[in-house]
Image (cartoon, rainbow, N blue to C red; front, top):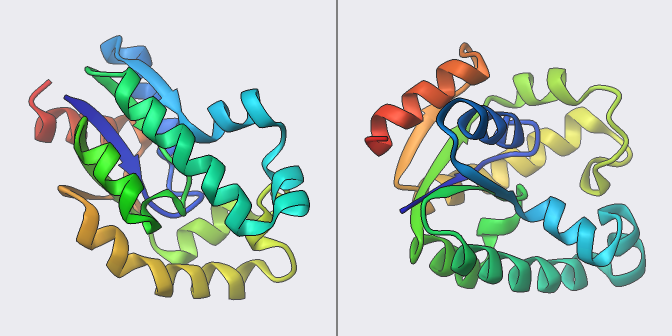
Length: 166
């Protein structure tokens, strides 16, 4: 059964996945990394296809990744679980862990990061808006919540290990 990490961009999904991979030897796939390998930059995809086109690619990749891994870690983009088909694919292969992170922490972590297309033009306002729109969805789709604000990535990984009975 896979560990699936979801949450806001900047919540530490990729970092925690890397820790779970390095410490516990779990195979790890990141849906955003897979998209970039196959289709090119996420910024470029947003520019050429729009958000809907990007989300279609993300859904196809998410389904494939969920089917290809059985005892590993999957880190997904912040908007991945907004589509029910993605949630179904991910739940069919694992448990979803929501890395709950306050907007203030996300803003602090993402200051100066210009690689995220949904945050262009007003980091604080966009993070607050996206967080308000998505937090209830993240909570509804997850199997467990791990609050990350006061924890190191290693501490988050240990909590997930305990919850997942690794």
